[in-house]
Image (cartoon, rainbow, N blue to C red; front, top):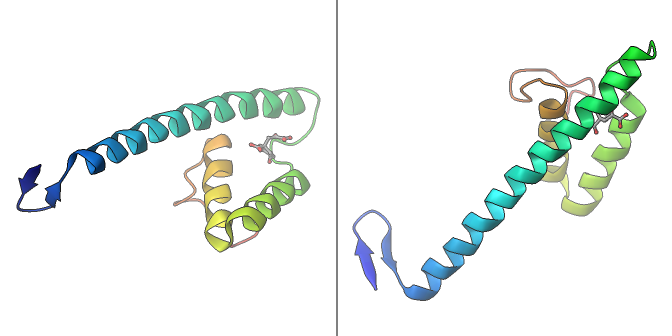
Length: 99
Ligand SMILES: O=C(O)C(=O)C[C@]1(C(=O)O)C=C[C@@H](O)C=C1
């Protein structure tokens, strides 16, 4: 058992769970990067074909999915993901739906 004043005791089981969290975070970040790459290709193809970079009805489907699965925070997560995939920071850029 390791004790640190700021965080309290961390036993072996907690350390193992934290290692799992760290591994999950690394996978999630990898998945987000993969999503960004695929999304950029879809957007570029649409723009090259004369369309708009943003496809609002598709974004609504994605927002609906995340809200259905995760509730209101899911909407915020989806908005952050969509902002990243549009090359925008969700925290600085107002979303078209204003949520
Ligand atoms: O699905 C598309 O058509 C995309 O362009 C991908 C994507 C996304 O990242 O999910 C990105 C921008 C659009 O506004 C909608 C969705």
